[in-house]
Length: 280
Image (tube, rainbow, N blue to C red; front, side, top):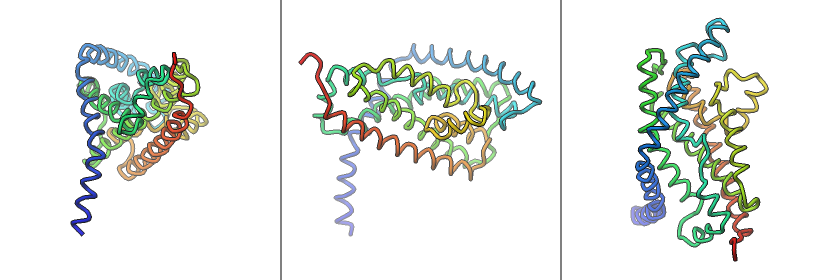
């Protein structure tokens, strides 16, 4: 049995190794943009305090709570979500991939001995994970310094929250990939990318938590993958949901990740047959 398992494990390791290296390369590449990280941290922190003033005033007007949020839970949501925006790609991304599709340079990517979608995702996730260090952690530290953030009381909630966060990053980045490869049909996708950014940031709860949406809008959000990007890790880490509910929530996130990866694969394979190299 061991003689069968060992070659199989070695083969799997060799297939996955390029993607691990691309993830590490994405992490290292993102670490060079220190001024951008500092600017992003400043922006996220300022907007966190602006949202804090507005949303806490809303809760006071509603009698102290609304949509399942107390002031402490709301402050947690504000600072956690602000710290995660860059990691989940809330402001768009994959402009480089979209440009390669537009010019036809992506043809070179198809000749490489790696899957185009997984290679792009590995690089993107690596950079996203790095962004948690100079942006998410300091923003959350500032929020904690206010003394108003709520945290989960169950220790298991923190590794579960980390798993949820990773699922959120992969889901957000996979959706951006799907938008970028629409260029196989549209050639120029900047308008679509801008439209997606506007719609996605609203439906994922960047401005107001999904729990405070009107019923029909909340249903619309949760019946799309967008509703499972920001909310789950924030709710799990703040203790707004119990661990048992958090496990099922992560399961739903994984299901959406799987569906989005399948969609990306279908779009990539179909688009490959339509690929045109601009200029000849």
